[in-house]
Length: 577
Image 1 (cartoon, rainbow, N blue to C red):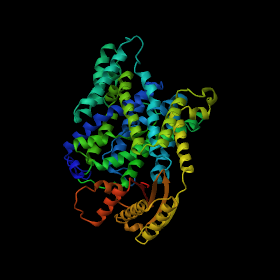
Image 2: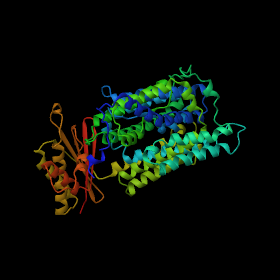
Image 3: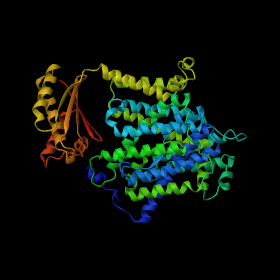
Image 4: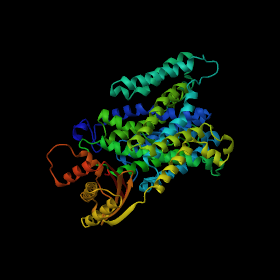
């Protein structure tokens, strides 16, 4: 099946503009699908942390406003802010645990300050992502995502049976159970179009079950005006941070970087489903997505609500509806803003019982755990990586639940730092990966100019490397051939002439019985890994460069191309004798 055929269902590409009625209809539909998680995530955090209704109302208002503004920024893009694609923004589930901890330890102002400071790291990551490629590896980021789920799940489970005093003991379990069964049933068996609405349908069914028991309070809904802005509620910023701030800051930074990694993946994926004729990944768009995400976090902190992030459901909606137009994204963002200024609609969502919101989040966080596992597995799992994942996950879980050294940690910065499972697990994972990097075979390096003149120098470099490690003639030739074809592939890419000369740094080291070679070059506009995936199995070869891609795909056991702003990194693995 060709890539062109897979994307034939695209009705409107980003640059194309459907009629206003069509765009508004699609935007409102998309907003209705994701408005529930945007609001419910805020509601659950505030309820678990025991915050006032006044602050809750403000936090929901701010979350809706910022989700609308940043969604419009994502699709329209201003300078380096925004991807230019239909990426929906909403409240981030990755921050549930750390925001609850911040609210309980220091209050709303402390949480707001932590969100503001940690958001700055996302801008730094967007600008210098290539520097972090060996630190935030798929193993580390996948483990942290799994720890987010493990950290949040106990809090969610406690809310499944939450009910007001005097309510029947069966009310909350029944409502949450019906909600969970409905959502899961629809996800497992419903058609694709209906599956997107499964969270909304599940929550509505759960509320219908809860209403006769008095769990769904309509008093606040009827008392709320149709149009207005919440009075008060803004927490401000804590300008004199204490122990709680410094102890939780690493956890917020890690959550921010994990959210950035998720945004990076969404920024790549949305490009693949937004064009009828697939194009190579434009990393400038991905960097713009990261910057817009960081701006959303900064605005969230300044306004005192939870950080936001891109929603992966953007990709599903684009695939199902075929609507990737920027005009649809603007309509979606405007719908969020409209809902924010309709207090009655916000109150309708806030009134959803905690048990029903927890049932919805059980599905969401469960899928988040699987997503973390997939990140780890896709990178390849050997005994070393398996050890890092297994030890880091259970160490983080143990610290989070106070199973190890609870008396030694205390209540200071160390206790706050390691008492968060995501932080402690990430620290262990990073330390173990750093140990593997430092104790591995020394990397041999070659620096040269990216041109045909570098080919003899590269061949000599690789042949010496193969001889040093006792490779036979056939394996040595395979190694040299992969190096040649990778170099040829990089040189054949279309580049920006204003960049001038491109330089190449090659580093190689043995990995078990194989050889891992990393090519780092100046910026380019195409993705070598994408080009390899586009090479079909048909016998006709229309151009010489495609021969190079076919050879590389055949002789290299693994090819990975990471495109950063200003840097291209191609890592190839060649099987040994």
